[in-house]
Length: 273
Image (tube, rainbow, N blue to C red; front, side, top):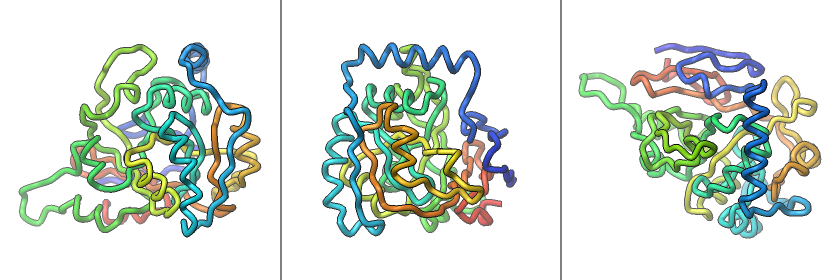
């Protein structure tokens, strides 16, 4: 079992190179973004004039305020919510137009795979084949180990099943090419959990990065900075829980059987080494 620590500013060079920190650049990205804008123009999805800002307590004690956010997500909205690491730009995993809009907000290559926020371990088995098992005496039971760690600041890369929506595979070409792996997150954040529970399903996500605001220890930007960075790019709402300092999630790859640590983040990865 290997550990591959990487600086936060680097791209991941690993078994799954698509799970990278740096967004793709170059001509291919520009062309893909232009195609996304064209698709969005004719998708029938309308943007709000200005994003809705919903302020809630970090402990989720006033989670009833999230009802409008949950309704927006069910109807194809794209917005920013807190997690136990960096805030995330999210949309309904099963809404094709919403997925399209999420990619335009971050101006990402259409083929760049993203991770999913799920409400519980049962949802993990819906979109993945689960954690590897072994009949060898004394071999680790990875499911039981992970169960003790989540909810928590981890991204687990697992083999994907055919239940993963086709728009998360290659929605630009229209081809249903089965994606072999997917990153799964179960965040330990009460506000994020309330949104997932209210939605009753998974969210596609990509982390918010505002370089001019984030410090070396990854300080989370305030709502004003998020609105400045993404407010004119198509987000519908921002859930504001105040400013805080966090560390990115730890990323552990299970697609090869034994776990491989792709990124040392907030979550303790010693058990996977």
